[in-house]
Image (cartoon, rainbow, N blue to C red; front, side, top):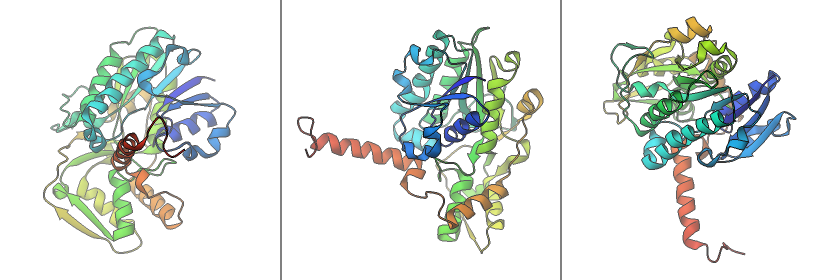
Length: 342
């Protein structure tokens, strides 16, 4: 069994990846700022093979990686709107922070480093895009991802295998739920409003992958033969789950137990539009997506209906970050001599 350090262990994918690794018998170190709270981890907090490290990837130290076999680096300000909230902070964390993690892991003798990147690096690609296609990022989030990829891959060597996973747009239930991802938010709006609003006419292409399938990809990359993953980039998703946005809306509507209205809005500030090939990860690592959008829609609907999932402020990443930044500003303005009220 291995010791795996997961950065972003309190996040949408990270919380499920930690549990999956523990279920398979590995020891896990969860490094995160835990912006969304440690209570989301639930019983994982008390697991004998889980170690929680509340830390910032920008200031992590080499000694924190001693004895670690694999690093899964998921720490980032997540998604394109959140990335544009503070471009300098996005580059600082998503690019330089993750480059720092990779360097500390290499110095500590870690054998493998896996970077969570995004298909958003393709931006407005033409045709079906492979890992060798040109990248045209249109957001700060995507540009920071691409810079982190390049920094990490420069460190790849026979003793330090670097793998980049460019994930499709993720969907499905998680312990740290997000309702700022296309299937998830469409399902929430269908339940709460009875309406799904589609921006840009819905003609944009978007590849999708279930969060549990994304976890599968990290586990595959972590324990595949080193020669199969060293210095490699893999798109993570399924050729069958490349959809136009309006098709996604129709799927959500068809899997709800009550009528839903779909409204089209011609304009859309989000310029991403890409259709992606996932042949490499399927052919070389044997990855196959096991979950589908209709399954996730029904799963999310049931969770909302039964009150088993948070639908509040913390589930919309950009709004939660904005709230934290504003709270920090307010506290700085009222704290005197290091005191708030006491």
